[in-house]
Image 1 (spheres, helix red, strand yellow):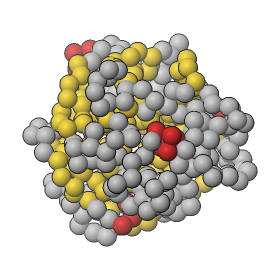
Image 2 (cartoon, rainbow, N blue to C red):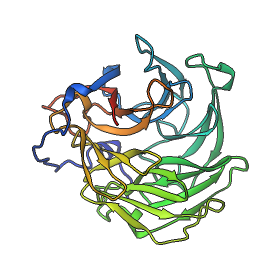
Image 3 (cartoon, rainbow, N blue to C red):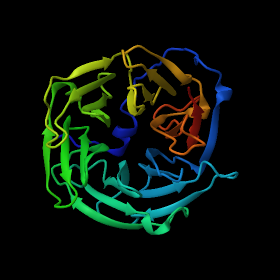
Length: 331
């Protein structure tokens, strides 16, 4: 069986030659909220707390951080590091299980079968920044490359396996996991060099939305909200989203899809039409966007937060910058 190296994961688009295009809106509307001090910091995913803080996972290190974007001087706090923990070199998808309890993916991105799901319980911290109790929920040894994650129902999550091209359901109470969705629209290419199929996942009503990084499409499929099983055929919402990664979605079905090597966010309307919402091919301010989330407080409910890898896969102007959190207002 093919096993990716970390270099493979970072360089899956080694032959990528992007076209030149410009952003639809001025770059001045983008605001860098926070950037990590070191180049080579790959922020992989992000979730929003009810108090407005952001929880971010790192692919480049097994770390979970909290960032306070609404403070006058945004700072970050290390919530937990798995440094030295056998089998854990990276953190990936993250989702809220219940108020201020978040589940996240941990493992070795180059080693299928190394995966486990953990939780960070911030309830004791109230609205304080960065305090959490971290504990393991369950191992998922059948996972190949666990990536995006979303909540299905109380204490049950769905997890995208990007390498296998399917979706795993995990009961966080019992630790039982099983493949619950497996569709051709979720599959990666057979070429070992590009191993990511299904990537970002979100649930809106009874529709399960997902991106496929290889095909460059956004899909949705209707599911049973109790079992998680499909009760309809997969639909293509939008195409021509090459090199897509994760996304955020509004209640009306509008999705903001990030495209890593293109350094842009695409706004996809419910009818599937889409255009560049922010960024450009030469945008170092948003180099390598990897995921997005929407603000939850009265102050930032119209703000999209985008996290980046600093252009580690496709350096802008030949330069890698630190991973960043970028804020973009929308209507």
